[in-house]
Amino acid sequence: MIVVNAVIETTAEKIANMTDAIAEMETASRLEAGCHDYTFSVEINNPDVIRITEKWESMAVLMDHFGQPHMAAFQAAMAAHPPKSVTAAFYEAKEVAMPTR
Image (cartoon, rainbow, N blue to C red; front, side):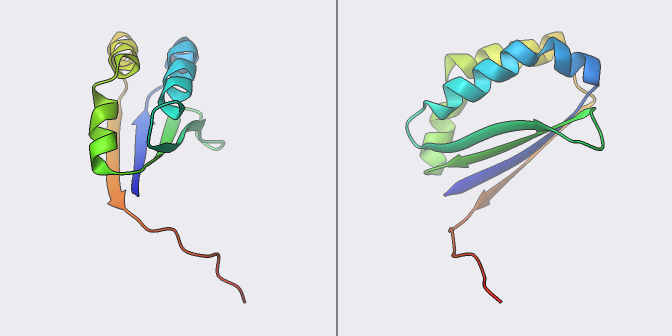
């Protein structure tokens, strides 16, 4: 499993302007083969920050995601509303059982 944690620092106004693009990106990504989760969220204590959490079956599937039309549309929306910064971390992970006391 590949887990992606991305952070977009922007403004609440730009987030509002990108709501349709964000919703389309989230919906279309979740329909991709090998996508286990794709979620945007806005931080409660900082409404100028979007967090993206993704879970992919493999790195190959993630690489295919980068070439999808909805990725290009989202990148265009980001270019129209440039963020202050974007960071992303990629992890190879294995799900484990929830610890018990």
